[in-house]
Amino acid sequence: MANIKHVDFIERKLGGLSLHLVPEVSGTWQPAADVFLTEGHVVIVLEVAGAEPRNIDVTYETGRLIVRGYRQHPAEGKSPRSFVRMEIPHGYFERVFDIPVRCDAESISATYHDGLVVIEASIAKSELPREIPIR
Image (cartoon, rainbow, N blue to C red):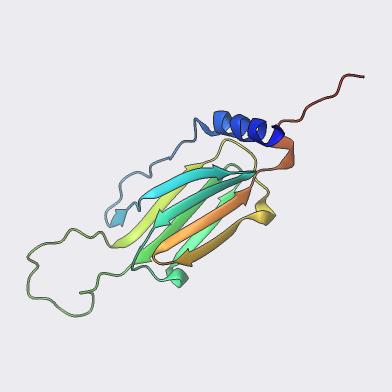
């Protein structure tokens, strides 16, 4: 029952999780993202298919997670004569996530698999609810 209380508390706290949008800058795009909770963790998943992991940077500042990178267009360097249709965003991208709970910065990990960047951060123990026994 205590685990359910922790998850409920965290969900209420993260209910206002803001996905801060970066001002539109020429050549930038924003990958789709999912943000969810597991027991004691915040997980952010970004869809960046086609971007090379070496071209993606993840930075954590207190309360803010920033993901920046670059996805090359398949025609880049091939001198196409014309484009019939261009729907896939490419070039520089950036997403900023304001996280309303403290995370343990040392616990943050980022992995790349099948075009997804998965970032996982442990919520600081001091942020989790604690039952105080009455003596």
